[in-house]
Each structure stands twice: as structure tokens, then as C-alpha cells.
Image 1 (cartoon, rainbow over the protein chains, first blue to last red):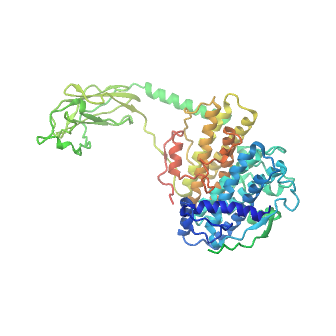
Image 2: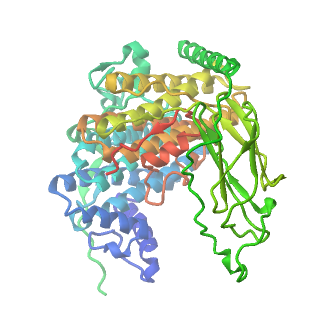
Image 3: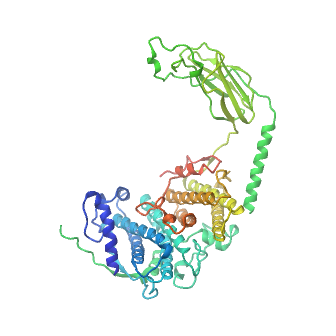
Length: 271
Length: 340
């Protein structure tokens, strides 16, 4: 089973749900940009219309949304494949991952709807990270480690883009609302990690070694808006109390080992 | 611990001041002659279809009085009585003897209300003592409907203005962080029954984070910071795990929704980023608290807070402050906050 197939399965489900109201059933696997706003569920359609009501999305905003879309596709694909993997025993944590998977799939649909024809082409993924995580879909420990990495990266990535979306109240608010969902995911996944045991929040820049180290670089900050916070708590607590952003370049370097080939867009079946 | 002590001392100080104020014996000033431009009833009732002859004779039981639930001391307090007939139609002429008398914390003695000649009567007294007054109203010697009325004489508290622009939004966040910090400080100082080591660690960490957030806003706002707010957690049973964690869940979800709904109100990119750094930590708190309440379920990011598009809850300041007002007793004036 390859990633193309995964996305195909996911998206047709989403699309079917979206267009069911019109009684139509879209056969194509990809929620392509051609999907009209009118066919979206009410809330989604309204939001998309609102975003566009403020004028066309700027090139910079499109770039941010596409960057977010890439991360969401990565996450959505990761959880879908993990939940489908026969050899991966998630035990009692399965309902947690099912909820996360549901959200990531919804985020992909939302961003693709916002971007329309401007959405970047989907890619395949290599969740072994080029061989660093070969047992990701058979060893729950590895799966949880990667999930923690993706979620914490997602939180830092969205945070780094907030300013770029600030000109649009709707896009900014949408991004913030995705951002806090990623943070909820991150916290609960972190607490599933057994070795080393993790808190729900990021202490200093730990772990500073191992495969996730790059994700936490610079998170040990103890000064905010030029206010030295050490008088009010330990360095650990102060760093936990504020999540730091990552730049797009930093995030792209982190996820690069997992991004595969571009998938050529599928042609919709002849009507 | 220190915060807890400070908080406790502040409460004690307030209580002793209140006691002094209540014990101070002062003579009651009252005036039967007020220039009550009391909104005399305009006879809006459309009961005039009762008959061609107009309103009948006065019915004390159907008559009413406008008594506010609360009033400040040392200010004339006007009570308007509206006479009605047996069909509850407003009387449009005067002529009855209306007596108003306050007893309780203040004793006004019987006051003969001024006959406004249009079916309304006004009486006025000036309460001095704090506490509850019972207001008895009679028309021609018979108690009217609802009499006696109760009115609480409470000090007038001026609302704390959050301010305008970005400062207003930062003060709004500061208010919420004060609330959260005060809550977890109490929780950690007196843990609920049967608390586990993990729960102690989680709640202590969150307490530390919220105190740091609070002090961050206080320092960042400098002289523009609102004062310390009074909080009321009497609705929380701090011995009960469920009560504490449920309240924590309310506060964390409220905080997440508040920051998510306030981001677009900020002009400064630096403030927006700072708020973003905090909101994800609040979301982490919310998820962990929710997972403690309902372990290994979808509850950490449940469908009650994350919608079908995968978007977390967001609320505008007015909605957030309305919820927070359950726990924050200092009145907050948010009228100058940015709305767009």
C-alpha cells in the first residue's frame, strides 16, 4: 500500500461527505482545486467565502497555506497509514490516534478547499524518514515518537506563520484554531511516550539528542517581549510556559526526509 | 505558596474592612421629599379594553413597586409604586395613601409616598448601613403584591477598565491568566482527595505556567496593567477531583478559545506572536486535563471543542468575559476593547 492509495482512500471519503447533499458522488480520489465552494458543508463554505470576501488571497498567504497543507498531508497520511497497519498495536491509545487522524484529514480538506486550484500537488511520503524509522508501522514506540515529532513540529510551524496571515482576520483565526488543535494532539501524544517519559509540554529544548532533537532547537527561551521571566519561575517552567516558533526553512529541513515524489494530478473520470 | 499567602491576606483585609463598615453606627438620613423625576408610568399597558369607564378602584394586591435588587449606601434611593385596579389595569389618577417603610440594616420609619397624581407614587430614603433592607409597601393600609421587597445595600464598585487597542487585549489576557493562576495556586496548596503523583506534577506544572503567564503580562503591560482582580471559587469543591479537574477544563478551554478569538484583534505582530506562544501551552494544558478526566479517549480534543473542520473553539472577548465573570468578582469594563 503506497501513500497515493492512502490519500485516495481518505479523500474520496471526505469528498463523498461534502457533496452528498447534492446527491452527487465524486469518483476522483483527489479533492482537487476545482471543487467548488458551493459544494462544501455550510460552515466550511462560509469560512472559505469569508476568506475570499476580504479580497483575493495574496501570494504570500497562498505560500503559507500551501506550506501548512504539506504538513497536514504528511500528518494525515501518517495516521491513516498507522491506523490501517495490521502490525501496529496501538493498544488503548487507538481512540486518541483515531481522533487525531480525523482532525488531520479535516485540516487537509479545509486547506485544499481554501486553496482551490492553487493547492500544491500532493506528494508521496516516506514515513521511515529514509530508513531512520523502519519499524514505524510495526513498533508503537517508534510510531509515537514520530507522532510527537510531527505534532510538535506542526505547533511550532503554524506559530511561525501567524504574522504572515495577520492581514486576513479569517485566515489568521483559522490558522490559530488549527494551531491549538495541533497543540492538543502534541500534549496527549507526548504523554504516551514511555521512554523517555514526556510531559505534555516542552521542557527547555529537550530532547537534545536523538531523532527529534532538531524539532526542539531554540525552545529553551526564558525572555519574552524583553521581559526576563526567570524571576517568576525556574528555567524549566518558563520554557514550558511558552512554545517557540520555527521558520518555514527550519520546518522544511525537519520534514524533508519524509517527503517523497510529487503525485501527478489524477484526471477526473469523463462525465 | 507566597501567592497563596498574599491572596489569603488580601481576603482577610477585605473582610475586616467590611466588618468595620457594618459596625459603624450612623444615623439614617432619609427624605420624604425627593424631586423624584421618577419615570412615572406611561400607562403602556393595553389593558384599557377593560371597559368604557376606564380603570376601577385600587387593588393593593395587583399594585407593584419598582425596587432595585441592589443599591449603594449614602445615596437617595427612590421607590416607585404603581397602583393598579382589580383587573391589573394601571390607575391613571392618584388619591391613595401609600406608605413605604424600610427595616433591616436601615430603618427608615414609615414614609408617606408622594402622590404623582397619575397612579404612581414615589418614596425615597437614603440607606447608610450595608446589608439587606426589607421594604414594606402598603396602599390604603394593605400590603401590595410582592411586599415586602428585599434590597441589598452594597458598596458601589467601580469597574476596572481593560483599556483599548492592543493594551486592552493584553489586559484581557492578563485578567484570564490572573484567574487561572489563582485557581491552580489554590489547587496545589490544598490538593483534592486521592490525588496521584502524576496529577500533582501536572497541576503543579500548570500552576507554575499560569503564574509565569500572569507575571509576564504584568511586566509587559507595566503601568498600563490592570490591578489584581478579586476571584471567587466558592462554586468549586477543592476536595473533589472531579470538581477541580472539571473547573480546570473549563478554564483551559476558555483560555484557548479566548486567545484564538483575540489574535485578529491585535495590531502588533510581536504581541500576536507572544499570544501564539501562550495559546499552544493552554491547549496542551486543556488536552492533558481532559485526558485525566477521560483517559485514552477522544476527549483531549473532543468534538465538543474541535469542530468537523478540525478547528478549535474560539470566542470573542465579550463571551469569554461573561463566562469568567462567574469567578472574577471585580467588575471588568471591556467597552473599549477592539472589536474588529
